[in-house]
Length: 320
Ligand code: ACO
Image 1 (cartoon, rainbow, N blue to C red):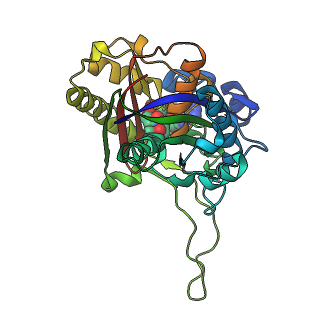
Image 2 (tube, rainbow, N blue to C red):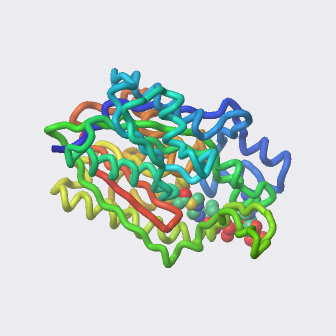
């Protein structure tokens, strides 16, 4: 028993913000951002919400899979920027879609959120408990950025990606995932402070803080190792893989991973030039972009990998 992705979908906010737009309001430039990250523009939410974009992406994925909402029995959303502490983004989507037969919950594994959600869905589906899952990554990161910190705010964007995942008899799903909480501080954002009858710590909101160089070092060492682990487990060589669909944080990370794996950069498609880093959403956003362009053929071996805050990482080899 294994799983297969049967459909994909995505949604972005309407508003495009280019590097030149940012350079008008802060001390930065297209040259600095493009040369260090590969990002040219990102979408930023105005009236869009995390759950609203996620529901739009989910609808598109169901249409692509030819599946009805009633057939969905599991909804898992990877997100660190849901609209509410509760209800979860997954429950909001359930309500919005009318997916009355589904169990719904969120997973916070930052930029690995979609991969952790996919693995969780696999565990449920493979055990026989459920049959059809909607797995999403959805973020409105612009609300947790410090727009006065040019070293972080230029990197991120908003959006949502979805995949319909089915239980199937045949196919490939081999996974590796891990966490390293000891290094958690290199990428962090505090939740609410304690304010109760006994202690008042104020209501200053916190924003994303990042030690970019430490995150870079983590990514370029952990990701190739995780990919190699999955390939070894599956007995598949890197040459046999059609595409490496990696979390879209930075083009230099992708180039370094390609080099370490001795694989052509052509096998590492990108969307970050148009999307920026959308944390948990980047892997399904890219997958949907590739699907729409007709790049994915039945039987193709695809490696997907997410990595980021926690620290966390998750890699899967799947058969399309
Ligand atoms: N525009 C112009 N100058 C800037 C900007 C900006 N937006 N941001 C920082 N600078 C300046 C800094 O102030 C610094 O100036 P100084 O030398 O006068 O002090 C200079 O640029 C270099 O700053 P660094 O932080 O050292 O820049 P670096 O070359 O390391 O690049 C980057 C930063 C792109 C974030 C890099 O560390 C990196 O690629 N990190 C990988 C992590 C990553 O991509 N994180 C994304 C989120 S995490 C995730 O998704 C896994």
